[in-house]
Length: 160
Image 1 (cartoon, rainbow, N blue to C red):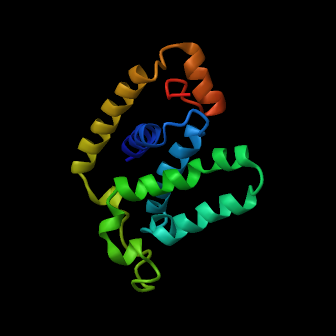
Image 2 (tube, helix red, strand yellow):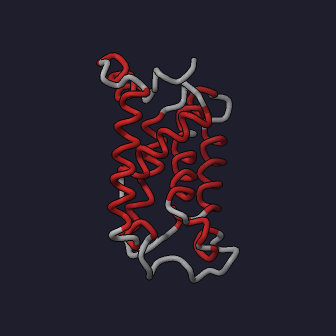
């Protein structure tokens, strides 16, 4: 399930933050990155709230004093948070709150994204439909707008 996370995170973050300066490529990266844990045998750190908070604080500390760098790299933890919401990890207390709800919850099971077939196919179709809507909403048929997203991570249809 990639389309669901990529397009929903992009659209939701664009509507909630309404920031033309956020790097939406990094939001999408953060939103799809936890799916990689499926190959590693279950939900690991990328599916936990404490890890997302640590990444957020890490970005703020590493880029301290450099506002533009902070704004750009905040897309990764924002995408990670979006993933937790979109895949329902928040409903799995032992994973979401690891290590506070116990330390043996990680690994050894499937990630929520892969445990929902055939429902996962419906999520992917919904993600594709949201992606098509976003294409029109943000005018990505226009080459200059598309290039701004690909090159700079900016959605020019978001309020300036």
